Amino acid sequence: MIHLVKRCAATLAAIAVAVITLAPASAVAAPTYTVGATATGVPFTFLDVKTNSIEGLMVDAITATGKAAGFDVTIQQTTFSALIPSLTTKKIDIVSAAMLKTPAREQVVDFSDTVYSYGEGLVVRADDKGRYASMDDLKGEVVGAQVGTAFVDALNKKGIFKEVRTYDSVSDILRDVALGRIKAGFGDHPIIAYQLQKNPNPQLRLVAEYQPSVKGQVCFVVRKGDTGTLEKLNAGIRKIKADGSLSEIVKKWQVE
Image (cartoon, rainbow, N blue to C red; front, top):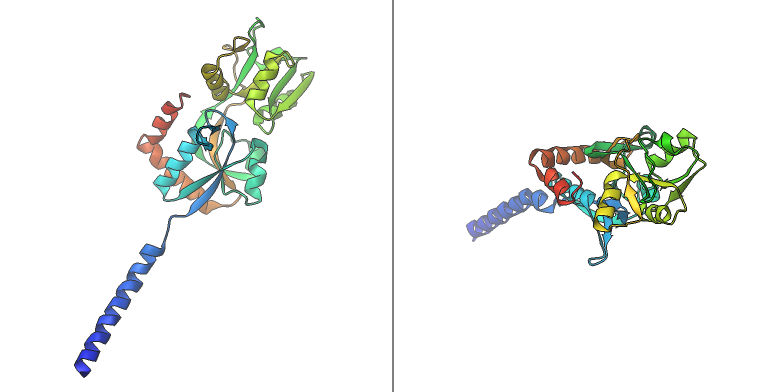
């Protein structure tokens, strides 16, 4: 009887050890980060009305990065101008949108390695036959750009325009250019090109000869000093660049 009790005790002890050994592996789940993205940045981030979810290049990129780096994401719809405030107040953990890396923003937040690079595009009315190779060619005119973007800062810094109007979205800019409310609109070149390709507007033209003055990198954005999240993001970016996943995402959204 004593031997049986000892044997049972030994068995229970062995099971306990096994459970303790296995518990950490089974209990550790992949972290989930809340990612802020806009609903108006086609094709980088936009609201798919069929699924009522945010989709786009930067959504696919952060999802692929998370898979490669071992974390999950939850996408939260946020207006562009509210992205950094939402990040700094911890309403979101990461920004994944068509947000260019700038010195001013670097003072407030930290940027990951580059995901995609581009500059601004210029759109005018189709019946406007002027040649516009730079911002300077629109001196004295009323122009527009999306609020919170680096393009607004660049236009205001020029100080040569009659007025610089700000808009919530590229679609709003295109509307006012078509209606003649502003002379020209500036915005993310891939976004303008994509929108005009998918929804042609005979009243508008994307100026082919225009040379962007704000060239930059689109990156994931984290709170200042959040090195842990930043390291995970950069590790994931390196992996999806190396295995070709990022190139496939860029091709999928037709912005190469």
